[in-house]
Amino acid sequence: MKLCVALDLPTKEENISLVKQLKGFDVWLKVGLRSYIRDGKPLLDEIKSISSSFRIFLDLKIHDIPNTMADAAESMVGLGVDMFNVHASSGKIAMSEVMQRLSKFENPPIVLAVTALTSFDEEGFFGVYNETIASKVIRFSQDAYESGLNGVVCSVYESRLIKSHTCERFLTLTPGIRPFGEASDDQQRVADIAKAKEEASDFIVVGRPIYRSNDPRGIVQKIVQTI
Image (cartoon, rainbow, N blue to C red; front, side, top):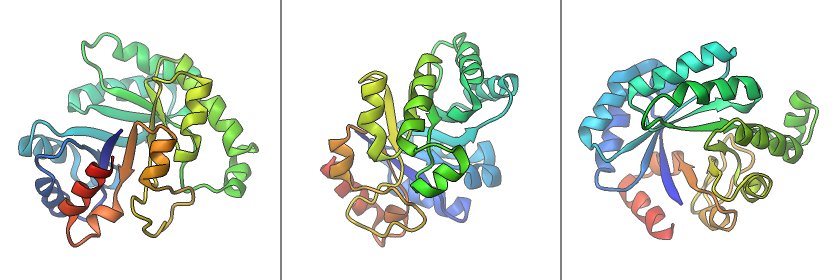
């Protein structure tokens, strides 16, 4: 299991300050929608300049027509990111086209499909998809697996379920991790590290519990030791 630290701070300077504090740790860094729209490729380049050992997950949740998604995937290679994601609800044709486009590259990024956002509870999810979270997540995951993706983004509570319906090596990245029982904030399906281990998560995403701490490096150290 690997720790992925979310860089969701209000300014580029704050994100970079956090990155500098994490130098030396074997962690992934998640650059999300707000940070990338605001700071773009220069942020990615600066992260890499701080330490080439940092691996970057660009969390933009691509969802569009198949050709546009494939074009975007090819552009991700040019950005030098190590992992990105698409929405599973874009469908098998779109996901397959993304993977086909990436197949011409020697070391393409890891590609994950977003299943059910962890901000959803059952009622909210059913209102959008007219299906339970568990049943839809299984279907989305099977679509992603059959389309050649490397894994999915899901809650901790679906991780083992997904692997049982796809493959044990099919990656699961789980947001909504509150490592030591912190507040859930706007997330609904949250869990701690012990639960993530139990459910065989491959990546855990932690944001606010780290960057809201007075000692982010200490918290990361504690998480890494717990993992």
